[in-house]
Length: 282
Ligand SMILES: NC(=O)c1ccc[n+]([C@@H]2O[C@H](COP(=O)([O-])OP(=O)(O)OC[C@H]3O[C@@H](n4cnc5c(N)ncnc54)[C@H](OP(=O)(O)O)[C@@H]3O)[C@@H](O)[C@H]2O)c1
Image (cartoon, rainbow, N blue to C red; front, side, top):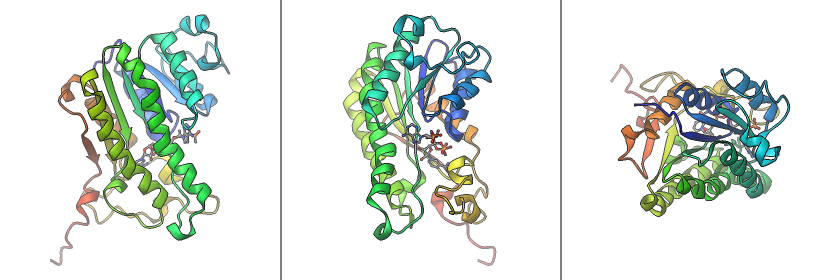
């Protein structure tokens, strides 16, 4: 079911907790993987861990910075490209380099995302609001805009936008993040309609709380990590998700087994959206 040999997968935020897991999963299942990241040193380290990666061949260099002929001659099934998802030119350079190396892209995973420092909307600085919306929402829009022509050149493909269970309710003190993830739902559904006749499926994933730096490290100096105060205890599956659990979902959504799914929202949250399980006293 999950053989991605010959397909090229472009993953943004590819050095993050979930991004790195997705890179490994697609690589293990035969895909060519574009490791798109701001932190290219970390991206090279990730690629170096994968047999056949290119990091060792071009230490300190990034394919997006190479002339076309050189990029086309890179060895291996991975490629590091520099990408700040908020910049349209950054997307264009990264996608052009990826296409030069592997030909048309088959799958885009709009994974890059940031959380806001916890604060009520009333006390949220405009700068924070803009940054979170810029990365989480505008970054996904730019990804779709830039990658769709490449998907079309390949005869179709698949896009997965990373939303969140926070896009199914309100979460106090995380206004910009929640708003950005709700907006991803509208973006996904609209893109699914617009791209249906190009054989491009567009879906979103909605993780619950996943053990990644977004959760286990502070989002702002002096702020406790979310994992310090989030208690999974009352929920049906009382633990955080492993990033690899989301990777397995992603492989399914982008495989032929999910050929009938578009505009769909895939929740993987250990029952978080169900709310707490009843207390034994009831
Ligand atoms: N962890 C959870 O519980 C959870 C739940 C629901 C949804 N999500 C979503 O899942 C996705 C992955 O998050 P994660 O949990 O793996 O968090 P993470 O470990 O913090 O990874 C986020 C990644 O996004 C990258 N990024 C941030 N701003 C960027 C920009 N302007 N351009 C390019 N890349 C940028 C980061 O790169 P740098 O290293 O350069 O900052 C990092 O690699 C996000 O969209 C997040 O909102 C997470």
